[in-house]
Image (cartoon, rainbow, N blue to C red; front, side):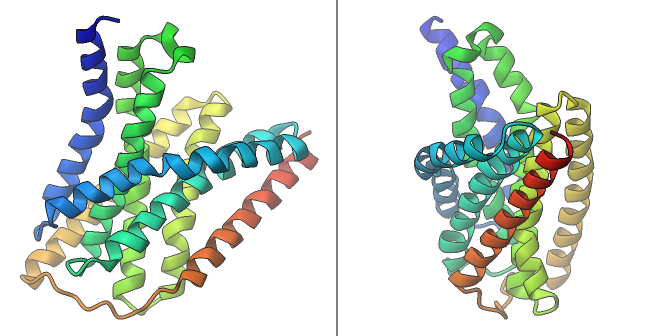
Length: 268
């Protein structure tokens, strides 16, 4: 690749994530501090550091216990979805929710998307410039992922932010919403990956289209709520403890392991 082609590949890899973030940011009638959103984006990209440590351990455990469909399921739901979504959640919980201007449900969606597309942008660069995918062409990979993997990460971030915001700002079904704020992104992410592993990409795109329609409707509702309130500040009525987060991660991990064992036993 020439220097010009490398620069173009970089742009194609990064621009879709940035465009999605700008779109979501502008849907917020009470915009967040741009600096904070950029930091969340960069923190999302930085989760590759703990992932580089955790992934080999998880892959070794997977290959030691599963050999068939359970192996594939564990890879997509635990190794990819649970690890990645949990680390994105940590950005939302430990950084974004501690900000003084984090004061309404829409904020959680904006920061959830920022962390998610930050990771997606870094991951995209890895795929675009990875030698194993050179035969497909950097431009082709960047273009395909602009309409698949990057929107997937953004939609997971929006889902995470929605239920996390509900858990923080509304007491009703607080524990349920907190659990769903991680569980649903893991299910969405894992299902998307699993569909591609089974060579049923059409199912992955149907999932994306459904989530896009649903997320757009939810954001329109939140935007209408903002316009009716005319003020941004909503008091956080609940406090979320670290142990609750780690307990939910543990429960979701157990569910994935049980599902993988079940698949391995019945579909070996």
